[in-house]
Image (tube, rainbow, N blue to C red):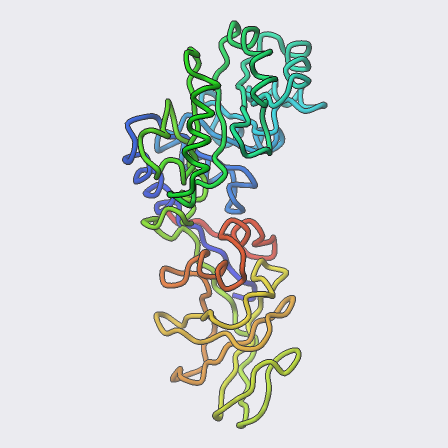
Length: 344
């Protein structure tokens, strides 16, 4: 193995979807935007469709076309960015359902695809996407007459269960949608875990499917194996990496492995994480470079050929915490230099 390898366990992904689905009495969809959080929209969507997912969510129409190719006709594919200028051909050809975010988008959709399904996205307080209450009040009678496929919104603080914003948005969403005949959706992974009040007609988990928080019971979906380029011996007092940031306090063996911040292993991670030889943790030392990481393998009986940096012991959220970011960013920034493999 000459390149870093990213392995995606599709069985674990399916188990995570089943576990989240079991927590609700309603339908469970799946968010597969950003190339299924960097893990491959084709294989991920195909696996989830086999599990019974019938509602997929993507960020843009181009992503929707890739998911349609994977899942075939039948399942609904919703587009968060709505009906953007230039999307009409893709929406029609791939039977995608745009989530209308503004009066302008509604007008565009009615002029270009008057008989094509659409959903409505409402802003219940996040101030990111969707119709604000006044705009929705004006548009609602016309939109409702055309039976939107869903009316939905998005929670800003659902990863903090006690945050008052959750109750505020729930109240606002109810006020904006009570009495509507269309299916309603408010909950992604965090909202699903907040309980039945937040579930409405269906939930749409994302990060929890891929092994990330706030779904603490998620099975790890991704492993990352890094090839060792060389191992060198250091005397006491010798340093490793840019800025002499690590100093050997004992005679040491340092493995240099082929991956770095260009591969989504952020420079800010620094110390506090390990690479693993089997179940044996080996501390990452020195600064992470663009293409290289250095690891203290002194306690291993022999020099390793490869080390694993993501596994069941150390998750995307552990890497994210060490880097001061979130698991989403770690997953989606793992670039194209990894050779990728899927296991069932």
